[in-house]
Length: 101
Image (cartoon, rainbow, N blue to C red; front, side, top):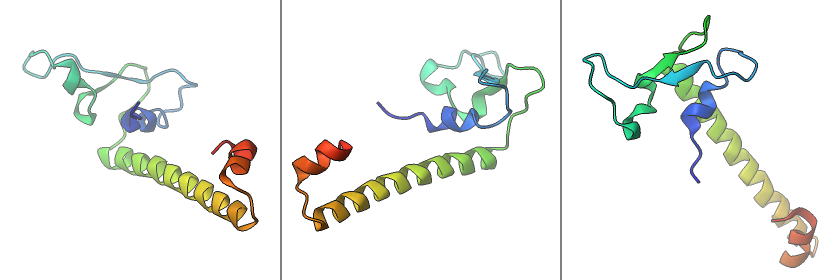
């Protein structure tokens, strides 16, 4: 399953105590229905919670990159830790039993 980085990033804006502040437009400015496959984009964000504001696209993109960078750092730390355990003499089965990777 692919992560939806856009929605994950959007949840980090407008502190609304876990309630979504955004939704997706269903029709464009000309009244044409937006196909479901095309709805979940920055251009189609709409505010559904009073008092919330749409962050700039640059801010959303920066938050997406921050999330991806954190994922990469976690992956790298896991690989580094596994390598260090191997250097100590543990085999793959022992490492998996200890930490599940």
